[in-house]
Image (cartoon, rainbow, N blue to C red; front, side, top):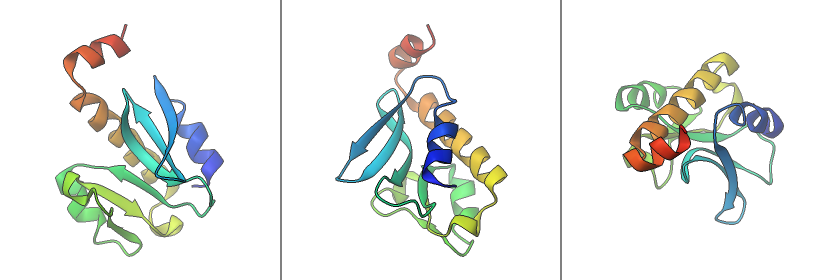
Length: 115
């Protein structure tokens, strides 16, 4: 998924913000917590996101999908080859990542966001 497609898709979720961190990493966040990250300087289709432990084990068996550097212990994957995962499945994974992160927000933050 190209950068603008990713931006457009991520902006469909409620209360999503964008932030550049660590130089050129474009982070999509909910409640200040990241749920998807890509490189803002390139349009190569790479993206990192959070998934369940079961999905993490399944996805990292696919060529072009690796445990995300620095955050793999939190079940983040990095999709290095844009064609490693079909676009429909990628959108589903991004959606699930958003909901996983939202569900882990403190109750007060979740309540604030759902007002």
